[in-house]
Image (cartoon, rainbow, N blue to C red; front, side, top):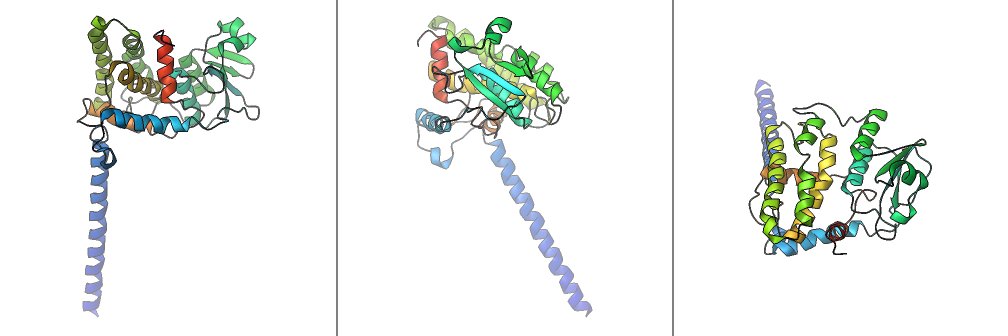
Length: 302
């Protein structure tokens, strides 16, 4: 009887040992895969050129924006977001600040209507009270503009699923440290004087270095630390513009496919954020072609 009980104990120990070992092997593999996300090709991408890989990515993104009826207005809700539209008003335009606000509302699970608005059809209240500035929020008859101010209003009015918790940094500190990123990007993309490109590119890369350093020196996966905040949702659409526009107009890639990442923390971060459910939500998403067209207009080419 004692021998049988001893045998049962031994078998139980062996089963537990195998289970624990299997868990750690799987966890280790997951960590390795997460660390290597920013660089190196997948098996499906091996043998493709950079342009072929980008075309595949572009096609994947653009397919999401082809479904009709993206922005049909539903039942009355308290949040009405007016934004830049495409040429005929059937789709949202390429505004990263509108996408930021949509990410905020989607993360909070809020019901809202989105109104792509052409310049010639802006509501009277928007023109008279806010000089037609977009994006604009209409909430129970009260209107406001400025994307960060709108986001902070939403956060205060709907405090569940907080996006402003303090981490290693506050979201305000991160935004202050990175506030030159989009202006630097815009100056670089719009520049047509080749003699100035090197300095303008360097300015953008300095900003990318700042973002990379924030990610390397804070705990967790986000800019403020462990929790996602307004800072992450604010910068993600701008990084999307940077990835698309710099490659298309300047032949510069900061998100690498076929080689080791230049900024591993940043490139891993970009991969995670672009894969976020809210970023790919049909209400908030606009295509790569929209981004390129928008910058062509800014460059005076369309």
